[in-house]
Length: 118
Image 1 (cartoon, rainbow, N blue to C red):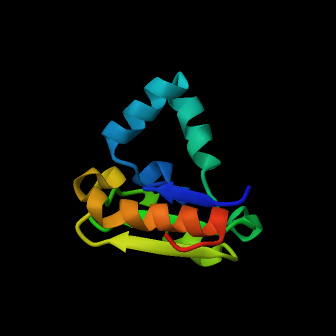
Image 2: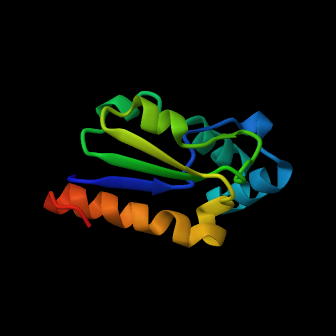
């Protein structure tokens, strides 16, 4: 893998702290509460982050705050070539702030994949 980027991805999930609507959606998609709880237990990138060798850009919106979800800043900090772009007014998936992060993502991929500046 030559380049990696994540947008509004969780670093860690905590089942007990997740809001009931989020747990309900996860249970529905996973086929039940037990399966969802087991899935959430495995969402912790602390051990994986140091092994990400490719340049990594983590994009998060500061307004994307869901209890029980640790956003991506620790992933960028723990990855050897990680960078975090925090968009102050960005919501979940940063749909309200595309002009403020898409050019950065494009530049990251262009530079990483071609070695040139965008």
